[in-house]
Length: 291
Ligand code: ATP
Image (cartoon, rainbow, N blue to C red):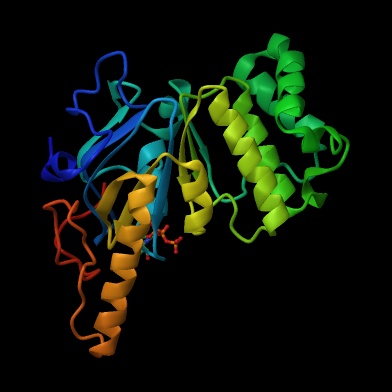
């Protein structure tokens, strides 16, 4: 187990990933890069099975990169990724999806020329087979009732929020073990954000663990039991949600102090829960390349 995992308060197991209550998702000592640019440093955290975990941090902290690694869209440079007790390090996204990973990236995945119902039928048929379509449709309309009233409307004419709800519905066919929802409320009006969050809550109630990547910190901490705070590509805090605000404030305070000093000395903003991983992030090539 990495030093960061040892320093945290909840959720990180031995990394073996085995056992009945294995986390839905676990990263142990994960680093990742875009070519020569290293974006994650020794990231360790766990998303408990059936729970809701918030992934928060300032712009460029590495939240989307974590969600890409989690869903198999970006390979790790070092470290391991566990999905529901299995070592899935290096697995491609389609293979991860087969064993229970669902990823809803920012508002994508809607066919503009098809109606809501056609969009759903297409996905449900592809994933669950023809015989599952009727049941899956019924379930989608029950869990996300807004879609029932829009079933004949073309995907391209839905509002941004409605499109995100449609992409959430697509994961309902076979309830995944974990759903990674990346900035799913970005740019939405508060009312539509409520609807999206209501959908997330219902998906969780059906047994799916959630990792919610979110800019609206207060909003996501209302629904999440646990939080992971990223700063400069490292875990600055992981633990129960109430403690996360303290970590965020600490980071903001450190930034303000650095700016007041003219920005020539930057603190990492780590809290007591901080890992022993890299604290010299400067966004420069450190010699490690991505895969
Ligand atoms: P935001 O909240 O602004 O979306 P984030 O926390 O999701 O930010 P990431 O998108 O994960 O941050 O980016 C982490 C770092 O990696 C940033 O410095 C970003 O510029 C860099 N990065 C992200 N995608 C790429 C890419 N395709 N190529 C090179 N660098 C990238």
